[in-house]
Amino acid sequence: MKAFILAAGFGTRLRPLTDHIPKPLIPILNIPSLFYTFFLLKQAGITEIICNIHHHSLALRRFIESSDLADLTITFSEEPVILGTGGGLKKCEKLLGTEEFLLVNSDIISDIDFRALIHHHHHSGRPGTLTLYETPEATAIGHIGVKDMLVKDFRNTRHTGLVSSYIYTGVAVFTPKIFSFLKDEFSGIVDTGFTGLIDNGGLSYYLHEGLWKDIGSMPNYWQANLDKTQEITSMSDQMNLAIGMHPHAISPEAVINTDAEISGSVIGKGCRIAAGCIIRNSVLLPGVTVKPETTIINAIVDTCSTTVIEHQKQDREKAW
Image (cartoon, rainbow, N blue to C red; front, side, top):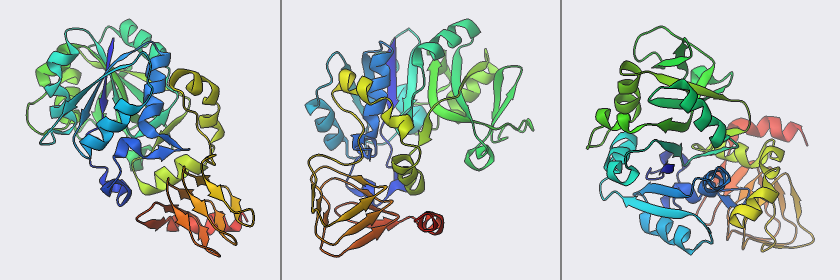
């Protein structure tokens, strides 16, 4: 089986980080987010991968090609004009061939068992299976309407009136039948492929109950790095064996003055933190230099910008 990774997006909700960093390379615990997906694919025995790319495409391609990803064959589908989730997949119809395939968004961190998902998909007998996740925030994120073990609606856009506490995780399995409903031009996969399968054969779902984090916005990105990170670090040994990388909070290649105070934070490769600095509940991306006596709390800092996560600030500071 092949995998298709959606990696072409602009990452507008992660600006200003994505103004100069490809969204799939934004690090979570000092590992580029896309590489968590590479790890899960390799664990599942899926070694043929297609990535669509557009925004910062050259930087993304060079980083992946320079990484030691033994046993993975990665093909890039470059989009000179971005095609969206639907058009981007349609462009790769010939590359994906005539067999079923796995689709994964590049802006999630999870421990979804791809083998179990594929087994469930085969058992369903449907042309597509979406991986869903239950959360009390489903209404705000975008709930999925389900009935009779099938996906029927998305945010009630099909006017079914179906409401649930499930959301789409960005992971799915499809047969080539989905290509019949996709468009060559810019389009979304939900309004074309997903809807087409709902009306022509049905769209089943697989419920994931483990780790799942969306990193597509600044607050979500901040939380993914700092909250309940043991779920991510528990994969450390396996990731190191599979892709030669492991999640960690403090890079051994950061230079930190012994007089600096660091707590509940992630410090990236090449960061330099001077004497008298206080860094709490923050994420410092690679290469950041912090001048003496600087205090950073509840922030995301890269070499070009600092973003304070205001809505979390009060609760976090109360904890100290």
